[in-house]
Image: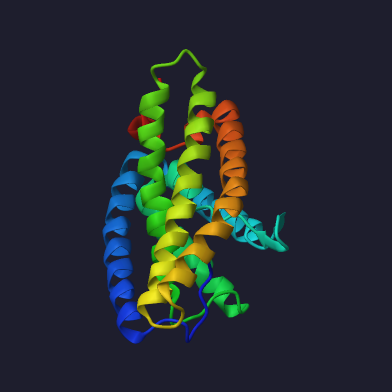
Length: 223
């Protein structure tokens, strides 16, 4: 899903840059309020460590049937741990570094951050919140509820992000809609399985051992 330079038309690139920057600015102020409530001396290095972990995970590919491979995107994972607005900023910073290694273009950083940070992160977070609400009607332990909700939410988010990505390619006139969208969605239906499992396992471990590290617990309202 790391789109390269030269694949999209300028209008799509500029529009998604504007949206991404606007949401990052909004997210910056929302995170500022979070720092006022939390111990910022602990929170700031925590953000750095999490960004480094996601960055490393994105370089680890797992095989997908059909001869391709996938890797963790981590948008929903970051959103659950640090909050939905933090996911855009963290993913953008990761994408900046990755673009310097040739993994994704520089001019389309705004587009890639939109797909992975906004769709994969913010939308993914609220999907997880929805599934937590549904699972609260069961008698499962809290960590299982959050892990299952994370698996489902992150899976749907990554498939949705691939669908949006396919549309971006199609409206740019690079590849026809009937080819771009099905191709992106098909592979990410498979890749999303790994995204859901890895994200769920990480969230389960953190929530079981250090629940206070899940800064969004009050928002998610896991019961």
